[in-house]
Image (cartoon, helix red, strand yellow):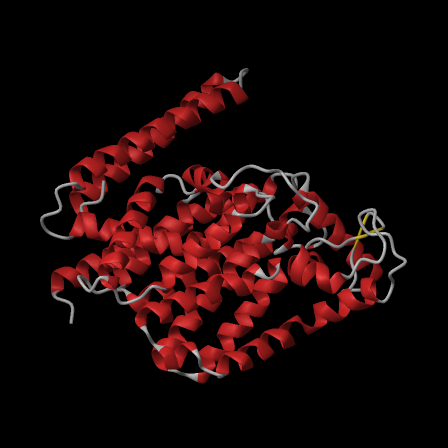
Length: 429
């Protein structure tokens, strides 16, 4: 039972979470009025338009050429939006906006399975305000849907392990199927790695070798059946088709192996050789302004897990850390990487960051709280200065606009900082 102080703190945090979601949503919606960006977003919008014009929802072309690169979920959802709102920039971004809101809700639900609502609310605040979330709402990619259904599957997998309820099992593997429809086998591999390590370290052998997992794969197969049929009829039945300069291309093999695992084995022709730490340093800006707390949170998680294995500490779950760490390592081993490849694990990163913030700022006797608070304030003020400089150079003929915008941002930050310090009992900032 919560005492009155804890209950009041939780209610205030709930209000702040709601306000943050509303404020972030305003920024997401502002991006609706930006023209669809090249190369990826514009290509996806064009593919969807061609799909609607043909009236064929299982085969895809890009300016009349056979298209074999991304799974169809983005095209299907965009097609529905185009049917409802017309073919325009706003309609293209609407599905991503609702996927983001769902992702925030699913992240909260996963957080509260193993931790309290305080952690859940803070994780939502973090995820709603990282740069990656703003980016994939403006420059829409397949990753928005991947993140949504990945965290949905993780929530229900965790719920199934805790409750053994069939409904969670069915929904978990339905989410895995939808994740794969969004971006391929990573939608299966990522939760599988997290579940495997969670059960292995906890030595829950019956759950680890549960024959029901095979039934789960059957559910995934059913979800993937329409796409698989489309790949077979468009490519495997027509080896004479020219696809990316090649003939005899198997759509099924490409989707289930080459596009994902082929980037590690070298079978995939796409290579940019950016190195194994590309996603790591990309995360420093993509997870801004919470990057410092994320790094420290990950270090603390590693330490806690090590102590748990040594029998010197207790950790209730390992799903969240290994659901982040192992897929991140696998993606970092790919021969072709882009910053948004890591976004799939950011909801889990938000939970780990929230846990660390709660540990530092709310546990008694933590001496680093004030130092970290100062560091975070300095980072945010530097970010505001950077925004001012960027706007100044982007609008050289209207520097008054830059000054006004900067003043508004600075005033907002100062007021928010003062409010949190004086009214919010959590002592953040």
